Length: 232
Image (cartoon, rainbow, N blue to C red; front, side, top):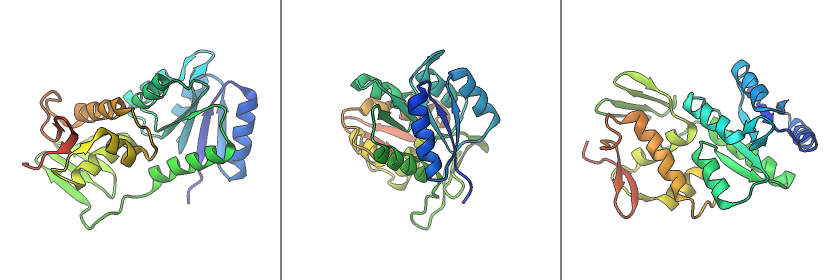
């Protein structure tokens, strides 16, 4: 197995020391940065298995960095670490492209479990069923390589965007509620945060649909949620 390298962007030195210590105890390599600027510089130089990102940093909001990374097509998984515990903070964090959200203070056992789970979900190949490639008109999904192409050109999807698309494709014509998609894709009980699904579906459509306002592939099931078009 390749070395797992984690970037921690956290300005609280006490928390940073604790996180670094426990991650190194499970044989992860860890780089620590205390500002958004230094964190971004590290991201541009290194390939990380995971980014642990504090929200409130001296030179800005970690959520802005998360959005920037997703806009620039960085697909590395991101876990947000924050003292903010209001529901709106969780919603905004997930909608900005984070894969998980851990509120401070947290137990080290839970923290390590969720770090491992996030890295595992990102690293494990999807192996369900015999079909490894799907083609729908000008859209092709290669499951083994986690690669999506549109009109022959590669489409950069985040981990969650790919998982959403793959789940819908595996169940063509089946409508999934937003709450069900949260359970299946995020793996945690984010009940009441259905707008997170909407945001990810909108970003997915912007990448694969010719006209996102009139989608051809990922359809809205009115009153239910979303499904993949079964008439292609």
